[in-house]
Figure 1: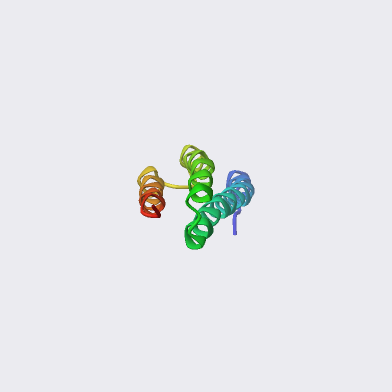
Figure 2 (figure 1 turned 120 degrees about the vertical axis):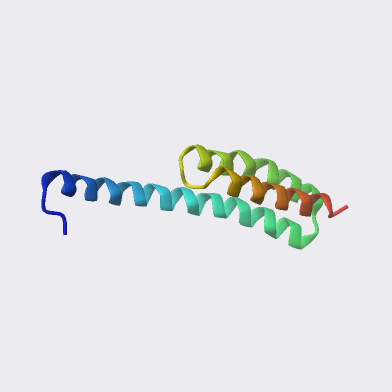
Length: 87
């Protein structure tokens, strides 16, 4: 357990940051799931529009430090290739 005032403050900050990051991660997963569902249904137009909405959300997660840049790029690349293959 934290003893010094600095360590106590850090613990408080970590809890707050964890909650924010958890919400961001959840939000991004929701957008990615919408793309996955559109791909599964075979609706290319819906998949493309969902992908266009998901991309900035995923990249925002990178700038906020929730995801690593390469992880987000890999996810986008794999999703876009799957959407492209729907034709």
